[in-house]
Every structure is written in C-alpha cells, then in structure tokens.
Amino acid sequence: MNREKEVYWIIGYGSLMHPDSLNRTVRDIAMGQTKPVRVVGYRRLFNLASVRAWKKDCTGQQAAAVLNVEAHSGSEFGGVAFRVGESGLSALDQREYIYRRITGVECQDLNSGEFLSQCIIYTALSGEELRSQKASFYEKRVRPLGLESLVSKEILPIDQYLSLCLQGAYWWGSQFGDHFVRNTFLGDAETSLSAFLTEGDVGRRLSLDLTEYIKKR
Image 1 (cartoon, helix red, strand yellow):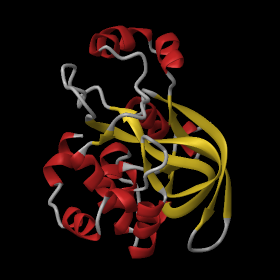
Image 2 (spheres, rainbow, N blue to C red; image 1 turned 45 degrees about the vertical axis):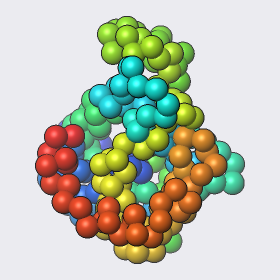
Image 3 (cartoon, rainbow, N blue to C red; image 1 turned 60 degrees about the vertical axis):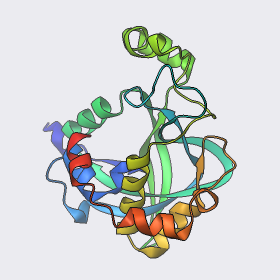
C-alpha cells in the first residue's frame, strides 16, 4: 500500500490560512485541495507564547502570543481545511511540535455547505503535557525562560504574526476576514480582535509586505 494515498483533512486557523505560509509547510499543495470552513465548539485565542519571541527580563505584558484553539461550547471560528498525505502530516507534526492533534473534528465547507468529518486540528499542549511529553524541549527552551506553561492569559499577539493571520483570513474574502476579527480573542478570552484593533489598524496591516517574514517562519 502506498501510504501517500492516505488523505487527511487538516484545519488551519492561524498562519496556515495564508497560502504562502501554507505552501512553505506543505509543498506543492493545490488550491483545489483547500477550502474555507466553519468549526463549531472551539474558541480561537492568542494565548500561546512563542519561545522565540519571549523576553525573559521583560516586565508587563509581552507581545509574544501566537494562535491556539480550545474546546468551548457555543463558540466558533473560521479556518481553512486542506488535504495532506502521510508526508504532509509528518511535516505538520514537526512544525506544530508544541501542539497535540485532535482527530474527529467536524467542520462545514463555507462554499458548498458540505460537512467534513474526521478532520484534524492542533491545540497547544498544557504545561503538564509539555513537561511530560516534550521534557527535553521544556528543560532546554521553556524552563530557562521562567515559564511553567506556554499557555498564558497575560500575553498579546506578536505584531507581524497578527498581520500575517489577518492577511491570510482576508485572502479568503472580506466576509471571512470580518468573521476572523469578530471570532478571534486575546489571551484573556474576552477581548475580540474587533475590540482590540480599529478598522484603520486592520487596513494598515493588510497592506504590509510580509514576504521576508514568511520566509523566516
């Protein structure tokens, strides 16, 4: 059996919504293999600290957060579902090494209304999971920063990463982008991007050239 024939639907909800960022992770993916989707029962939050962005001696709130999703009744978010084989799944596992896979997630194709079942989504490891499952990474990269967990309510989005996610969301259309802004929250789980950003902030970020940033991610 050719294992590459195994096909998985992955739900991207952050930088992977941007086609250029997605193609850097899953090479040669065709746009016909991607579709905008709605996922119910999960909330999208900027509550995961990036070890590369974290400044150990910084006081106050840090702009160190990337996106995460957590199960939450009554919430929803818009993402992008894309198809991968075994090699693509392996590449994603390497990229999302501080996340764990959740399988069996259902989402709805926003264009056709079709429901896709048995999809995969990645959610951040808790502090306990990080210490037990990624002990070497925790000891070398996380504990020296003075952190017990990378999930935090006290951090703000990384500036360029936020712009990349906004550009990725609006690439799928203004309705999808507006839904992203309304249904994405800061780490406090209360402040939406629509409250955090003005329309001018969003417009400015959508006009930024992020080519070099994407290459370095």
